[in-house]
Length: 482
Image 1 (spheres, one colour):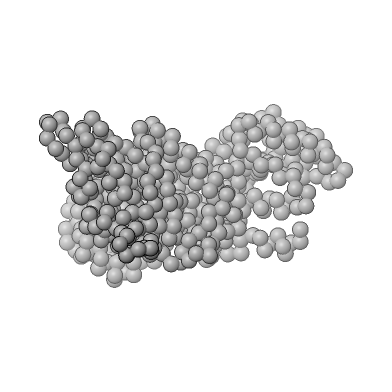
Image 2 (cartoon, helix red, strand yellow; image 1 turned 135 degrees about the vertical axis):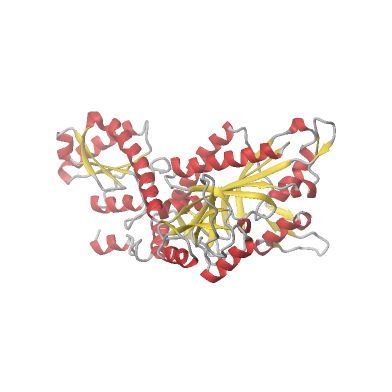
């Protein structure tokens, strides 16, 4: 293939210079996603969906251990259901897409922006006694929120995929315990599987989910300086239970309203992987989430083609027993083109094999994250691959944590906060937690908000809010967000 053509299929924007264009090119050229003719929507391509399936497979195992059962509820929600819970209805009003009615006598249906109301109608029939609790249900589904016009693949779109858990408990203590338990599970998913470091904490009052006593979140800072909310777990108030008549006969033989939580992560996790780990050559995938662990690229001339391909097939068969492997034996492309192609797709390891390697009874392994190349005896191939994949997973998380650490700035004034955020950081500052203060800060700074109030705060001397000067309740991370 000509050098000009090879160059055209690569990334033409640099991550450090034009992050939005770089991100879009990586998603498109690595074949994760595509734009849709429907404004604000996206197409998830097989390679991108394979990553989502890996997330589902991992998390479904965790849900099973937590005794959460998967179910499915309708896409359409009667308008009367939204009206029942006023705070929830008001919070989602700008985002709801409505189905056009065929008859004026027919009730309007919303296309689900979230499933609390349709699920809780069913819960009102399923729950009768304290013996029916706790009820733990999750569904994997699509969601439509109509406020988005310009799609940012995986990060912002009118339709996206997610899981949403909705559980019911006898007591607020049980509810709260599992709100934080799910948050811990999300942190493990983000850090242990996706290698994306996160801060675990509560949302500010202004960012709390409509209808919740409090909301918790995992948030990360992306390399472009914006914060990304990667998962939330909400402690719902009893408004939903009362609105939908979810009640049960308690141990004291009295009718009681239960306590509920809801929690979810979405396909924006894929966007976080792209932004956190990708480089100017394309994707860099953590091994635990990569659809392909190793790509084998045979290197040969016509005279030794058969010999090299035969040995490559043997290696492929051997490695396929324990790893996800791709043998790129396409004859129409050069080894260099193949190197670039699989680098673009973020495959963690490249295995190179040429006639000299066969004679030396070795293979060459190349790490996608660092580009480090190493000749390895064939007898040690599998153990070395295991070691390298483990190192890549660990090193990507360590690199992300170092980035977060070096881009966290302590701010004592609004000007320091603005300066920190303008330079691609998030700011850690004392905060009063008052809605009006945060709203004014957001307006005055062009969109900076309190992203996450960390849970592991140490006791400190009384201090004043970074913005209004009133007594601070806690420290919070501030940033512009997606």
